[in-house]
Every structure is written in structure tokens, then in C-alpha cells.
Length: 542
Image 1: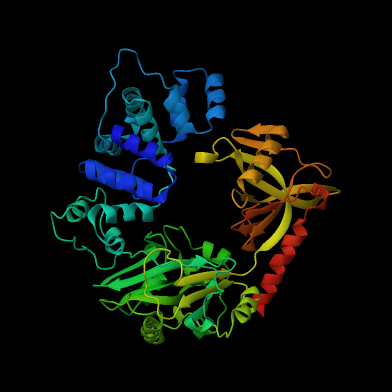
Image 2: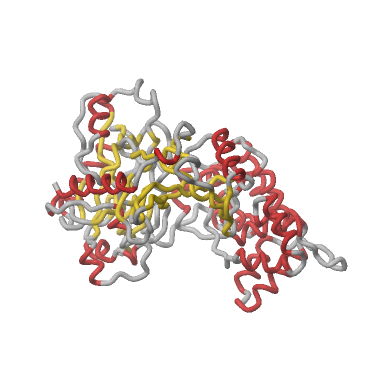
């Protein structure tokens, strides 16, 4: 565990991308199997481990220290794993150990529920401080070391002298501790063969359009498509195996049997999963809120299948039958895709239409006022671009429509995690509505990004100086008509929701700017949000 703990410490303190890659590559080179494979899985988010609840960790800590002292310590440090690793007092007569990462994981995954408390206590006793911290981060499920799965794969590529695209292709077809992957990278065995043909392949991602990005580009070199507000998927049918994956590689086949039943062509396609009807069936595409009724369900009832019929709007093709066509240009791949979709079930599949434009100004107007409220914006794809995994800047861009904006009042705040663990950075905000004769604030959303570091310090100071109540880690902030903190909130969409007190649910809210020039009485009302929803509903009906 000590080597893994040291790796995490160094990664946290190393901001440079290339330096992080070198640290990882050196660790892979110096660490034996299976520890390096489990470390890779933990960093890349593919490790399956019996999670330990924070409540259990708190209970174990309170067996050995005063509750008030622990609360003060946690409040000062701001991170549960770091707090416990520092305050934990092991018995004086117990010698410290350095168990391997793989042995710790094996014990966690083979210990019954009744004995897990004893196991965790024993491990906390035998580990030294940094290893204890690494262990706690593992079992609570959040390393927060500034390393993405893509960065870890690049470190593997550098370590083995291979192209990162080859590792991307293999990634979802092999499992931790990745011993066959490391054997290939070290030149001891041939490249691993995938045991199942319909594995997930890392998707190609678009770069958001920033100011000046399009100035040096020629419109004639790009195709444009609408960006629909569903979820990005990958649909595979190879070797008699059918699978539907989310953008991150989660297998969601069981939730959408209607899609798999209609899949009668062989290959792998990239597209958007939506609810409603395809363009070819002359039925309207429905909102993301409707799609949410189908997501994350273990079983889907016949009524759910009837009320929320799913379909795929195809964007691209990766495999035409067993043939890998990702190296072909976008226009050539689209011709293949068009042929596939034309022959497919017209109620379950349609082709994403191209948007005609002659200049960036034309496209900007279309982006700002799309013909359907379920459209988020525009996708730009270079005509000759191959399908390459990850987010390389240049081949694909996404240009979202302008967000909705409201002024809202901060109501509650909670500390963040990682680098933000000492700041109040997660905020709940609300707008005004009538409650009988009174005007009250009703919460309508939460946001934890969008602001600068300097703005975060302003928000944090206001929370600390104006807390009126505490509910566990949550602080209630003073908010009245003549006193409070107003923020401008930007969000991508809004729907009615029976699950929220306000009756509305926002999509991707973020704090766009601080409105210190406004008093809370000047913030927006719930009626404003409801009017936005009604306008979208009217546009959808039309």
C-alpha cells in the first residue's frame, strides 16, 4: 500500500500533465502484478470494490476520540478520509504493516458484511498515515488526484511504447488487474485478443467552440448537425452479440430492450438515445425529462415501453459489419451509415440530418434559434476527419445554443471536495413564489461550478458570515428580501418535475456571475421558470 499511497501523494502535488504521465509510467514499470493493475483500475475508475460507508468510518473513529474534537477536526481539515487518517490512534503495542494493494482489495471483497467493520478497523490500525489515507480514499470511492482515465491510458502508451488508440480499443474488452495488457506492453506476449466482439469502443468527443476558434477555419471544410438533448450512446451488433452502451461505457442494454429487439443490422454505430418518435415516423422527439423516466431502471414494464418509446438518432459508424471504418473520413463513413439506417426499423432508427449553412454567421443564427427545443445546439465535423477516440481539438466542435439565465438567491451551502474541501463551494439557490399572502424563496437548483477562484472566496466568506442554521454538513444562509446574496445562474434546459418542491428541474445549472449589485427582492420568480417551460412545450407542440 505504501507505494500506491506515495503515488497518490505525488500526483496530487504535481499539476503538470506530462509530469503526471511520467509518475504513472514509472509506477507501472517499478510495481509488480497484480498491484499495478489494481492501481490503474482505481485511478481510471474501473475498480470494483466493496464500498465502505462514511457512517461506518465515523463510528469507528468515535470509538477512539471525543465526538466534539472529531467534529472540530473534520471542520478544520474538510475531507473525511484525510481527517481520519490523521487522527486515528492505533494501539501502541501494534507494529505497523505494509500489506500489498492487491491483498487489501482481496480481503475487502471476500469479507462478509458482518465482519467488514472489524476488517476496516484492523486495516486502519496496521497502516501508517499516508497508506491509511490511500485506503480510505479507495473505499469511499473518490481519489480526486487530477488524473483522468485518458491520462492513465496515455501513461500506459508511454510505458509500453504503443499508440494510445490501440489501448483505447482494448480497454473495455479486458478487466482489472490487466495482467495481459501489461504483458503485451512489456513485450512478453502478443497483443490481447478481445473475447467478446461487441465491446465498447471509446467515443470521439467534440471541443466546445470558444471565441476565435472558427476564425481560421473554412465553413466549406465542415459538416453541421443538430446536437440533440438525449444521451450519447454506442450500439453494437457483432458476432451475434448485441449491446447498448452509454458514452462512458456502461452497459444499458437491459433498460432498452426495444432498441435491441429492433437491431437487425451488423456493426457499431454512434448516436443519441432519445424518446418519442423518429423523423421517419412523423412523431415528435420528446424532452430529456421524458428520457429520464427510462434511465437507470433494472426492469422496464410494458407500460413504460409504450409510454416512453426509445429510438436512436445515428451520428456515425465505427464498424460496418466486422470492418473497422474509423480511419475513413466523416463523409465516407456517413455514406455507409446512411445505407444502414435507411434499411433499419424506421420507428427505432433515423439519421441525424445535416444542417445547410454558408458562413459561420448563418450557423450562429441557426444555433441561437434551433427549430426544436430538444436541440441543444450544433455539432461541427471536419469532412475528412477520421473517428479518433478522445477529445482532440480540431476535427469536431460543439456549439451549444445560448443558455437560459435567471437571477437567484443563495439559500444553502456545503463544502466541496479535494482542493475545495476547505471552501463552501456547493450551493443551493432559490427564487420567489407566493405562499398564501407571503413571498417565500423556494429552492430550484444546485450548482458547484462556473465561478472563478476569486469569486469562490467571496461566496465562501459570505456563507461563513451569514450562516443561520446547520443541518449536518449543510449551512442555511440568511436570505431575506432586503439581505442575501444574488447570483446569475445559467442552465441548458428546464422541465416540470414532480420530484422537486418547486415543480421544476434544471439541466446543468452553473453560477455564471455574482450579482452583488442586486438585493434578493430583485431576483427572479418561479413564474419566470414556469413561463420558460410553457414556451418550450408550445414550441414542441407546434
